[in-house]
Image (cartoon, rainbow, N blue to C red; front, top):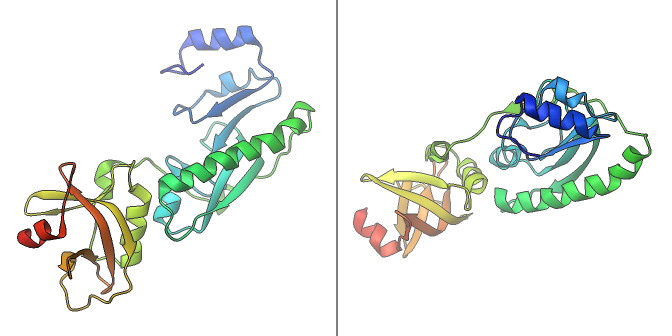
Length: 241
């Protein structure tokens, strides 16, 4: 049951007739009213892609990667008036490795969500639902992200730019930069160990390799770069530069 408008009176009537023991919300993008949640005899629960109370709100995995976190996870919690604010039932953590993209972390969190449900459901069905405090003062709330948020600020450190790349790498819209009115998107990159203090910040070509030089003199080795959906070679970029 996934209506476009959860405040529709017809939805409330439909759920009322069902007389649910539980209501679950998994990746549903709308808030449910407290009145609707109260229809579930044993509670209404959401699966959130972070270790609450950290990263409440939208796209939590992308935000965690952007901020350089080394772990995240999945949290099953009771739904309340505020988003991701109810008591915690169970959670499972997963590591974020230094080169993981958000898409790769998302795959881990899906497995963590399955494990969390597998471990929690028997107790929930038996009427012994855990209620771990969700201390919002110890956490954080983030909104959604747009493709425009992937714009690269080359003045930042290489690690910060790399985290941005990882957070929005394909299949997300990607980290991008503009040169001569052409928008370039980083499709694949790694942190480089070669110092680039002698080069201006931004895109550069060195020894037929593409780099993104950052404000701290370090760089990203860009293995795949595109513009207008087509691959950009080092030779083509060198001609532009």
